[in-house]
Length: 288
Image 1 (tube, rainbow, N blue to C red):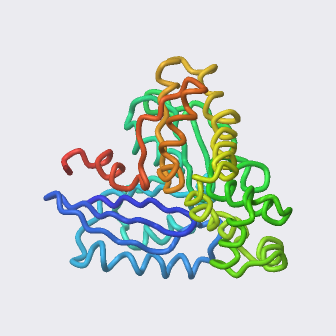
Image 2 (image 1 turned 90 degrees about the vertical axis):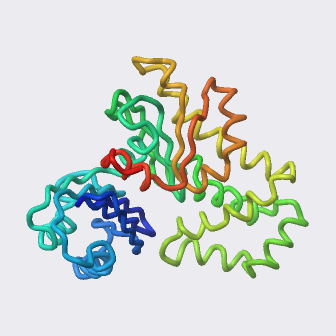
């Protein structure tokens, strides 16, 4: 049996693939070894085990993809728990950007864009990440993400720049005034998640010219500052103009991305809300 895990900041998708092709699924909260205490990590793993492997079958391989996995040290807390659970398994740890790349292009080539709460990207050639423009996080970067769009909307809202009818609708729906917004951004935890939670409201109002321009600026910044820059250093220029997207925010912006891509000579060829099912196909070719 193989276990494939794809973990983000808020949720972790687990798949157990048995030798006969049977697939069992589990969904738990996000499993970030850089943010969670050891006991919390243990509880998350324990929640997944009985769902994935109720009969105690032998696990041969585990492929774990997660945000924040940048070194052996960062994966150590999760590795120790998985080794206790599956002492005979071969375990591999990889970054979330490699998860997106393999899900979108397999062992092929293209530009990979993660567009969710935050954003990231890379140039992927023949199954290898050859360049990664640093995302910068929600303060210094994360262009083309839910947090970037939410940040832009809130910034204009507190300055009184949002069209009046949309501002009134927003306040009626959320109950948020200036003081509440400032408190949530600067005083509460998870400011990035709060700002990203604005994105669905903004995207629901793209018929308004002001909001439409805001979304286009958010998307255009990501294309200009990241995606379009890969073409110049790529061995295969044509492949570097093919872009695949992973993430709910990116999927919600599919039409905008396709249109904006034309301005930069980019073609958006694939959109996935989550990479997990394609990762199962990548690691288990016998699973249809």
